[in-house]
Length: 346
Length: 294
Image (cartoon, rainbow over all chains, first blue to last red; front, top):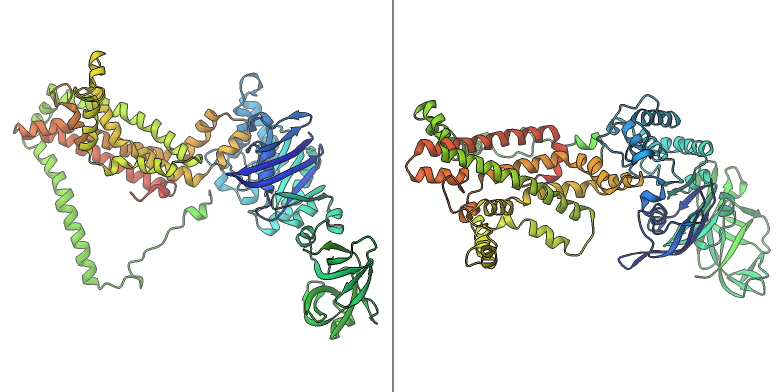
């Protein structure tokens, strides 16, 4: 089921949580809403679910306007951050709940509900735990039951709010792979909220980066990482370094010297140069480069991270070098960014 | 929320710990004061109630119970409890639901208002109904014209009882529901349940022990209420006398055995309530923890 969010605005007590957000979600897509806390990602998810109503704008399921439909009518599977399993019901009763509360002919007989619950438990690899209560399960198992319960109603869309937020790192990684497999097997259109960029980039077909109630960028993991379209995305996704620069006649200057990068279409004036610390080219002689004094050097996993003080203003930037690179021993290092981007000075 | 590790956590108070600085004799004196106080003010009267009730033997005790007015008082008390407790359940759940699950203006005021009967003298609450429904009261004329008798009749007694007892269920449920939040209800709705199903299958089971606890206390108070009921009842023997009122009348008539016989029933109710309350606290202490403190 395609989901289209059209110019949605949401206010809580006059305080805007989302400003004019539009988003097209393709059928069968696994899409991540990524952003820091307060960016509006959970609000957007709850609006799609029908747990909140938009102040303005519309939400379409396929061609149908679902904006005024209740959550029951929307037929979405929602997985809550803290699972919200019914603690007084067994695992099987939790999973069967959505079928049990149906009315009339659409309600399957009890035996059929039990069979469906067992089937879903197999799918989430928890066979045999039908009779357990939520309190007797580990966090990871509870999350799987919550997903099975959401899938039991054959939802048009699966919505997951920080699905792995309360789990420890190893279980998270495991469940991440598992969720991808489930998604590929069932083909549900799936939207999940996360503040963990690694999770978003690894798991999702497309990532929606959000900040302060707005969508900053939508794209595949490669798009987002390689061509961030705003300083926020540059700073939020992966490591980034930035320097205040000046543009004159299409050439980029750092203080009083050109750094050997051309920006023919950029307007003259102040700007900020963004690049990835690991995506730099080290230079020997310096005619058109960024040069700085080594202020600090740290070994981080497989690389060495060097902090440089640049120019008279003592602006600091970080670059990453291979561990055994000779430049790491020097007191002065000259480099030029490989891939970079200019944004107007803030 | 449902973590068993968190539930079982409780501060440990070890009498030998360094935090206790009082000397052993001082501790002994303090404990002795508490025990003597409880014995004199609580245990002794309780014993006397039963001793006096059985002062002339079990035959007289049963005979007193068989008295028509006494039986009528018991029936009336049971009837009043049977009406006011369910009303309280409905009101308590509605109030707790509204306060815990919705955001609205005047919420703090409503919460304070619910506590009003705890802070107002029961006699005042009885008088309010007299002013409202009495012959010279606001609605007196109208009621008389329509032949409706509220004061000095069962409806008045029920109203007064509901008034003094209505915080019990609500006060138990509000903190419990607030602590549990909306997550489970939202989950049920997202699975297609309607409001009634959500309440019946999810909300109610989540608060059932707190509810039972509230009902227990509410029932004890409903059966034992004296002041408010005394004002509105009119003390008509065999008609509008509840058990507490009947105790007073019998005692004023120097019928000690009769008075203490009825009193022993009330005391028995109190004991049963106490035992059930303790059992609930032992078994479901963690779930009730949020509601403790009054």
